[in-house]
Length: 140
Ligand code: FAD
Image (tube, rainbow, N blue to C red; front, side, top):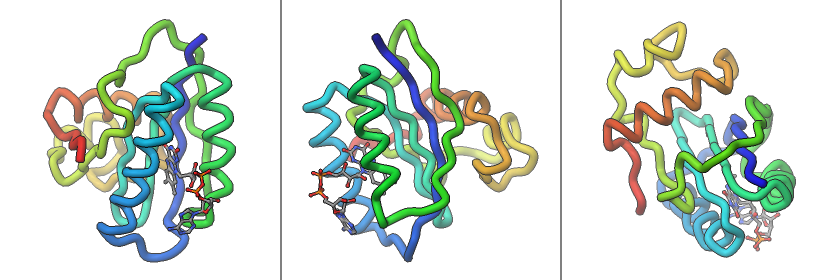
């Protein structure tokens, strides 16, 4: 059975492009092996991640992610049973906010500044779908 999980967190220290790419690389390796798919967004020191896959695999990986010292203030925003995956094409896609426009953000958020701590999981899932449609997901 499939589940979808969305959380947000804050970088514990400065995360540069190299650090972020390292997280993406190891995520993709593990996720591919475990049948996990999803998206990861990093913007102004804040991570938002959507994971989908088998319940046991997602739960176990989320537990490891929570314990990762590279981030803090992890907040679970959504956890649902799902009938089908919606981000099956990405072992972990890089959701690039720089490629999202202001209107897209305002559609789901109180302001054009993305603050997942002030947003619902549903709104973030909506934003991720919008970013997919806009071609704002990088695979590398
Ligand atoms: P290793 O990769 O060998 O890591 C061993 C330990 O060292 C872990 O506790 C890890 O947290 C820590 N660690 C590893 N590299 C560093 C580093 N450069 N600096 C500080 N500590 C480090 N993993 C996935 O498999 N899938 C994901 O989708 C995923 N998403 C993530 C999203 C975020 C925002 C972050 C911060 C991490 C994510 N990770 C993800 C990584 C995850 O937290 C664990 O590092 C990974 O699951 C552990 O893999 P491993 O058992 O092979 O241990």
